[in-house]
Image (cartoon, rainbow, N blue to C red; front, side):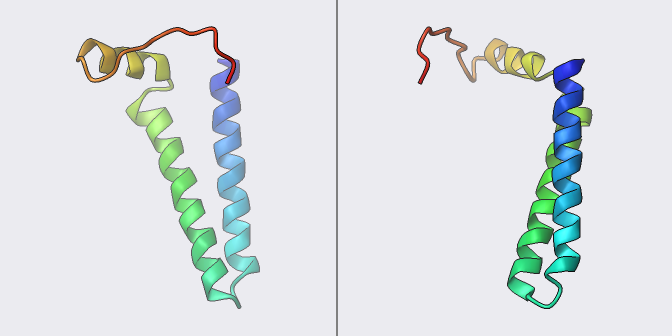
Length: 79
């Protein structure tokens, strides 16, 4: 729950900053469009995490592995 809440909080904060940037850059259309893009991107990631994956990314990867689309491999590599 802690990591899930942290991700949700992060996505909500980033979306909020992007929304503020839309107004901040209203006189600069290129930057305003970029801010709008980021706002929608963070909204979509939040929706994916909470609705599509039900806050369970491990379960999503497990389903992909079970269907043969990915293979989860453990490694001691740090980079």
